[in-house]
Length: 316
Image (cartoon, rainbow, N blue to C red):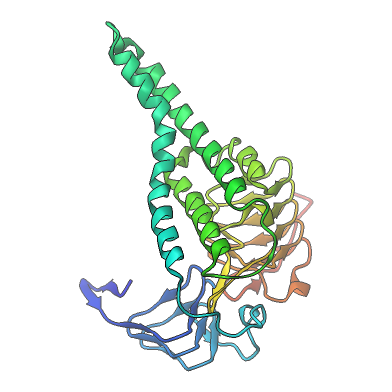
């Protein structure tokens, strides 16, 4: 944010990010913090005030600390810097996509608007206010969701895991659909956290088991997401956000087992497989070592800390 309020004072200071840096999803940079060239701050990490990440180093956690081994993000990008510069056609594509994002909800609102115009023309239009408002809202949600599904398959088809140039035709099309998924949280918020969300996500390509519950999850690629039966995904969870670094875009699978729990504002990176009956706490990440993710385990924090089970008393 570049500012914070402390003891009644508004503090404003610089934040400096060098060349070829990578700042992870849902991370925070403190005041007067610095990322030198080619430095990296991992996902769901916090770089405190007045701290600096030296060139080429990777820091992870809250608060962030130097990571001795190459981060998972580094190991997933074996290529060098992608070709610099953006072709003129991509500039035009992003401009058209920015405007086209606004047209999707506008078209979805058209049936409700036409209904209201017809009702106002009648003599006793005020008698139809409540039922027409319901019909108009339902038609907006239905048409919007249908538009997103159609555009997703027309522009992207079935997305496959891989590493793609960020500034490419695929990168542009993926950005557009990703933006539509993001604005759906604002355009149709009443759809989320309901039984009607799961059929829509399945239409988009997600694999979701029976009796699973999904609240306001975000940052996911439906074709690469699978959620087991009776699992619960809480509000504001990041599910397999794409990784972007040095001009490359990486997409991969994210799997959540059956009867698993992912808490509010947690982050599940790509390549993650959460075992059955596991719990990931609020504002937490799964363990980076997949061997530690065993069934019926609980994790909290960034980096993740194993939470032992409390003693179970059966003779109460």
